[in-house]
Length: 338
Ligand code: NAD
Image (cartoon, rainbow, N blue to C red; front, top):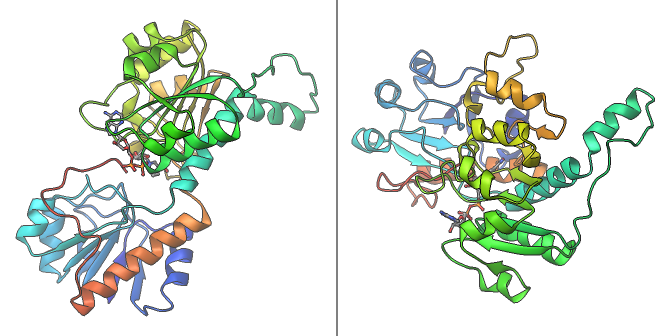
């Protein structure tokens, strides 16, 4: 299949090219994002492969359909950037990668927690300056601490299990569907309010929905234990950034590690080192010594990228052969977070 791969980075090219050996698709890598101004680049391609921050709205879909595109292959789980109703009307199938490697995100979450809790990035910055003083680097054991895990699906369950069985934490959890296997190892499901009041560390793994948007807000921070550590590798808008900044300023929040950020679409995945970043909230976050931010990279492992590439190319092969599309996104589905 002739596939226009938009918004490609070197790692996308590497993993898609390697995974393509058994499929033999004709991959055409393009650097620009897919948006109305670039959609005509896909003319003559039966499939278009896109990522989270590409725009697949009605205007783009009309252009793609006119150019002969029959398949949108999202190389991610989320599909909130696609107008599914218009795609269906134009006869364009949409496929995604529903799960690639929960281990990638769960392990990164634990890494962020340890890094921020034990001041590892600050220590490394000091050592590079030949400053070996330890003042200001005192951390806390994870063992015995009470951690709240919000969302115990594929990723949250791995995090809860690791914290409970590996580190010996008291683990509280909140989910619409308690996991009996976690309960069997001592994870305790409690109402979200109680979790937020009781835990010393909170880690977020639920999707972004109207119910979970800004679940960490001024009221939650006010009710929390002083010195709360917050880790978010799920979706930026689970946290009200303005309230978080106030919580850090008042010292109610003790440490924060974020792989996702509410307004990340304007920042992440690009090298802006020569630009002026005009997001004042983001810049303020970076000034706190007890805040650690990474640019949405929790998924970025060899295994996850390999799985994303393979699933995407397999879906294209299925579409070309007229086989059922296992990872098809139906217009009736509610968009999950990425
Ligand atoms: P999942 O669907 O397996 O699990 C989500 C869990 O959240 C489910 O158990 C669900 O019941 C629960 N949930 C839904 N609404 C809830 C609510 N109101 N309160 C508490 N729990 C609720 O998803 P997953 O694969 O574990 O992914 C979790 C999140 O991780 C995703 O939503 C996504 O935002 C994020 N993610 C981030 C990256 C990254 O690179 N940072 C990569 C992949 C996924």
